[in-house]
Length: 537
Ligand code: GLN
Image (cartoon, rainbow, N blue to C red; front, side, top):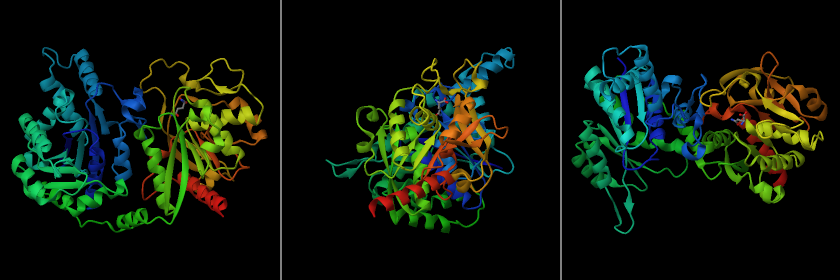
């Protein structure tokens, strides 16, 4: 029988529900259980693919091409749970499915209502992940208790214990315990209110995880337990981590959260296997080197917009026992200031993906500097497309080279719309998405990094390298070293006459884990380290 854990959040958003859910998943896996992770998002968009990164942060892409919430990135970084379309549902998807059923006549004769039709649809979406080989499904509910749009989801998870037995379900509620400087005291009232609201809906949390800036102590957690009707030992404080998010699971272990969950769900599990993870934490805490990587993009002030990129840089740093300092630079700054001063003290340049032309000319300036000054360079998706444009303009003399995304009538469309995109009209879910195979050329840096000829990476784009120009690029010194198996699509370009210049059409950042850093990120940070050593010698 698959057990279900529901994770809700109260008081404020951005409490780190995703991280906590992922950490719980990791701990249960490390006790030998099979876990599936899921996120429910109460917004009406069908998926986050059409939302601005300013609104929503990064869009995280899965192997099957689903465009999902960035919390799924945490799930994949912390656990080995298999994620697919069923791992992220939004209000938009739930309603779309119910409305389609209504049109097909599946509710013939009935009035279709939030309860029971929408709530049944939500329950089915949760239960879909249960199967004989899955021990636990962890479902995280987006938003905060009190949001109007979250109500149908809360009602649905309230009903699940009635369907499958109370003993098979566990409600974990995350709250904030703020510290008031003026009063020199941690305040438990917001937590009490948020649990009260949850109980009004009919959900009694079994475990409370209290986020705090500083330790709050037993006195406060006992008080919370009393007022919230939760066992004392089930009120757990989660103090902000000083070093890294990867320490979150260790904090939960200290409070025996894994133990508590397994006991409350009446499961049998093996001992906690954490030795290698402790090693990782030791490496994270004790780096031997340091490098600075410039990340040049247009959502630079929004940390979550390039979430997986920053995480992947960190992972490669863990691999090299190196602290990676990401210097985040707004692309448009390169249109106002010279690249040499903006990139002073930088050991490597990374340009992430993006859409639209704002900042593109700045990215091209930055890439030019890295290419000419032999600074390790890593281009990702739009970053790759900008490298191709830069090379065409400044090395091959095609001064007007561009992508047709930015200039439809350019004489030299070195980046152009993918053939398959020419008839696409809808914006949602219609890009070239998900995992695609790619073959690597002998002698390339990419092959050296991956150590295998065929790779599979995740894509999210509409434009591509224009193969019409392939021979000209090769002759000028930029090589397409990774292509689709039929050779038609260029997935990777490199400049062989450069210490480390690799630009990829796909998103390697979606396949990096803290203990299993992505090979290209490792190669890039390795090259940046060498550059740093040369520079500081
Ligand atoms: N805008 C570019 C395209 O659609 C790049 C997309 C991206 O960086 N994800 O092809």
